[in-house]
Structures are given as C-alpha cells and as structure tokens.
Image 1: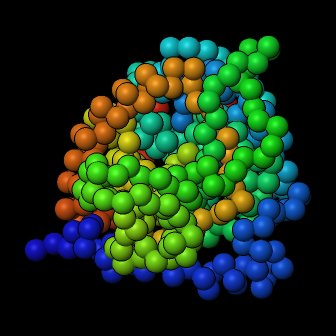
Image 2: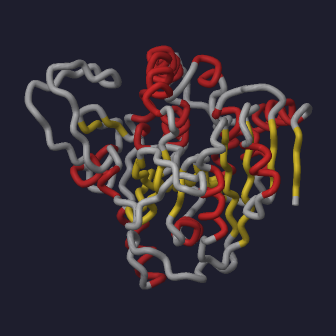
Image 3: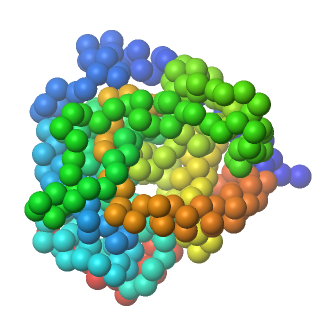
Length: 345
C-alpha cells in the first residue's frame, strides 16, 4: 500500500514562527512590514506571468512591475496562452519583460506557468497573474524573505472594471486592502453546501481565516478552518515558490487546464506542503486584481467547470505525493516550447 498525498499532508506541520521571527532578528524588519526601497541586493527572482486575453489589464500590470523598488536581479517571463486579443503584442513591446512567449495553441494556465518556470533562472519563482497590479515593494518583500522550503502567499483586492478616458482600467487612488481577500475576510453562505468541504453552515459567520489560523499555522497537519485548508491558501495570483521544489513535484498538473478552471494551484500547494514546504503569508504583499469587462460571464464559465477540476484534485489526493519529477517536467515544458514563439531581451 502507498501513502496518499492526503495522508502525507496530515503529517506536515506549518509552524513557521521560528522562520518569521528569525528574519526579524537578522534584519530588524517586521515580517509583515513593507520592505524599504532598494532592498534585495545579492538576491535573484524570476517572475512568471501566465496570460490569456488580458490586454485590457496588461499595460497597467507591466507598468507596476517597472515601478518595483528593489536592488535584486529580476527577470520577468510572460507566457501567452494563445490569446486572441492584443496580449502578446503588448507583451513583446513592453520594457518590463525579459522574455515573452506565445504558445502555439491554448493549453491552460497550468501549462503556461510550467513553461515560464522552465525558462526561469532564479531559485525563487514568483507567480503573478496578468491582471494583478502590485504595490511597489512586493518584489523586495518576496526576494528578501524567500527560502528553499517556503511558499510565500500574497493577497488580492478585486476591482470592478471601469474604463478610463485613455482606454485602460481605472485604478483606485488608495493602496490595495488586505481585508478584501477572501482568505482574510470571508462571508460564507448560510444553508448551502460549501463545495470544497461539503459542510453546510446554519448560522451566519464573520469568517477570518488568516487571523483565526494564526497566519495559517493552525492549518498544518491536515487541519481546516470551515471550508479552508492549507493547500487552498496557495493562490497563484501572487505566490512565491522555490524553483527546485517546484520542478521536483512536477510543477502544475496540466490536466487541470484540459478540464477547465481552478484547483491547479491548490494541488501545487498540496504537493509542496507534502514535500516539506511551509506556507507563510505576506500581509503587506497585496495587489489590485482587475476584473475583466465581462467578469460575470467569465465567472459563470469558470464555475461551470469547477466540479470537474475539484474531482480531479480529489483523485490526485488519493495518489502518492509527487516527487522526483524534474526530468519529466523539463521534457514536457520543452515540448510545449518547440512550436512556441519566444522573444528574449
């Protein structure tokens, strides 16, 4: 008999206080404190952005990367998943990018992220969605705190699309708010089955997943907070992972992209946790998530496929924890790159 991924997760703690306090003792900087401009010298970071029809948001996203204040060696890799709009044209011209890739056919965000991670040269990979506008200290926050066994999670503040006179999206005047993320402030429905856990709440809940779990520490060893467990906290809208561990677990399972939307980041989180990684939040690392003009229609399409991707995730949980898959990861990513257009500066 094998030990399943689900059973392995039950034996993995997430007690990271020693790591965060150690950082503060070494640097004099609070773990959740925005990092001063110019920090990060001597460190390297690979930023991977999967993109599919995000021309409405991409200029603002890439401009925010240019505005990052750090001293690290940073490369930015965008992988266009065969967009049908101007996404790749924007990417190939923008100075924020080190590498722009256009896949020959649509493969899904899991494949796009894997291709980007294959090209990455740094020990730390920061995944950023192509509709996430980051605060100027995020690169420095990540690169000064990353380690070979940590998964660092940022947060997102959704913004309803509104076109500016210049044609781009309107951004709020104030900084993005941490409490806008559902992992921080959560208002679940009453009397309805929560699809991830299968539980039904009978009373209203003022949910506080981040605070109630002591920065996710109490989610270790397979524990949960209502509908949330530790793998679900790994959201690739803004997520830093160690590249060596990412390759060893095989990266993102690309079957998720075939089935539809969702759960590929949850599965990656589970795989990295099983490999011994800690999941640690960065409360100061928050970005604006720019909703598309047709957000309601896109959400209906995405949620219609979620039962299939959830079922696939449940199946993967029943299998052994993935490991030793670096060679397969590289071979598969190289195959995707065979017919891709690659522009490197």
